[in-house]
Length: 206
Image (cartoon, rainbow, N blue to C red):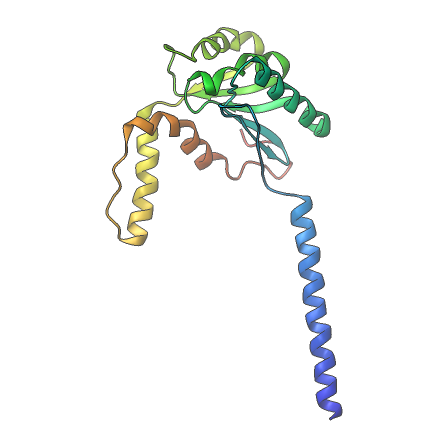
């Protein structure tokens, strides 16, 4: 009986220790997330802020109207007021495609915050391209590195992803739809290169 009681007590202590360890680990993970996505309300448009321990990336700078341009700017101001370590700096602004609902607030973002890099797919004509063209004119003076990712690069990246998936699951290869390839362009390349974005010294992986 004493042996059974001893085993029961030990088991309870062991379980309690495991629970405490899991709680402690969860607290560490919660306190130091690898990435937090902020889906910002900009009306019928898109703007998503990716927050890392060592930097921030804005995917799309769209806005439904001038009021939502102001709302996005204010959201970023409050974000940087909390993350003073980032010095009002976006490591990258990434535009998935140059339509107005993805670029309307781009100029306001560049004029109010420091932008290190700018990525899009190089569409320079049509609705929504005024601010991307303006940024290109301002890039040298503002120290912004501009990179274009064209459809051919996207198709190669997407094909590589599908090849890995289909080889693992023995499924038929997927057909890449060019109608959406320009939208996927920066996203595919960015996530392939940036999922391990923070270096050991907490600098951003450029």
